[in-house]
Length: 211
Image 1: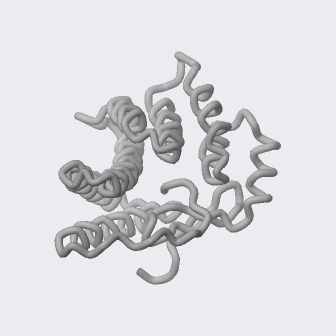
Image 2: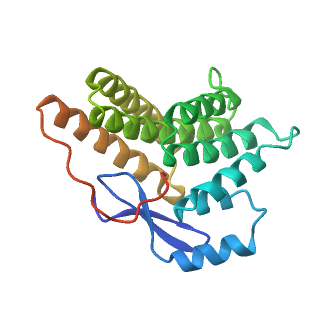
């Protein structure tokens, strides 16, 4: 890929690592200041997560879902943010449940608009990354069958998200580039696992949210 994959969050540049598929915030202090100034903004859930403040992000994520009158697509977007927090806390199964619910809220079986299809693509993209991380955890725990299954499901999700975004002509905030990055990383992981190449050590970089 040409150059790093990234986007802006509240005017702050965020870069997605090609290997971990996690994000690093280039100016954490500026993003923290935005969160302090906008505590009720639902995007704060994602921004707190990107800052590694997961307990606060979890509280904000649950609170963002409390309104029973939320439209289904809005709820799906907010639920996906909350699922990300669970993922970063290592609660992969609860995260998967939230991603599944978010997919249902988009009208997964028959999306009725470009907006619902775009949100569903986002759910699949994020669920792919969660399943990818879960597969790595299962491999480290010496559960190779579970790791393989999760890895395959992750790649399926990532390819579905990419197909949807290509169909929609998505270019906003680098979403299409992010999907291509995710598919490429998961394909490398499948190849690496097939030939027995060991998992590389952690990079040691500050890691945050998925895109």
